[in-house]
Image (cartoon, rainbow, N blue to C red; front, side):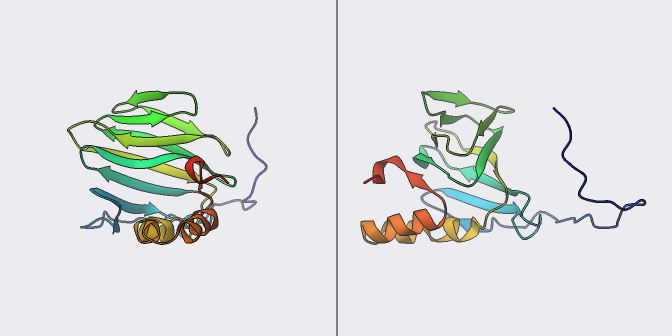
Length: 163
């Protein structure tokens, strides 16, 4: 394994680091008792990755079994216990545990416990996930066809919606 080809060819480096203070509130509420903070989105990272903090209340479904065609997804548990489906079986992840899901990998996650859970989600390369997070609950109330089109637009292929 080797490093990728250089993308910066200068000699002295650049002043380009970006600092973002923690927001006072999450960027969005989501389905049920889940909130999502946009730590670093596609725009912030120039499309390299997206990093999101997810806080889930007790007994909360995160996402049913699905896969992505264009992005990988990774999870890092900050606190609590979360159940992950790794495409084969359900496993329990706790503080410090990490799950990597390559492009095309089946996965799901949920909080089965009586306690909250906090985790980081990383999408690579970066994708415009914000609209999905902000409108998924709204589209879940629409027709099956509209929901499926919305999910496909956002590279989410749920196994319960396969034709």
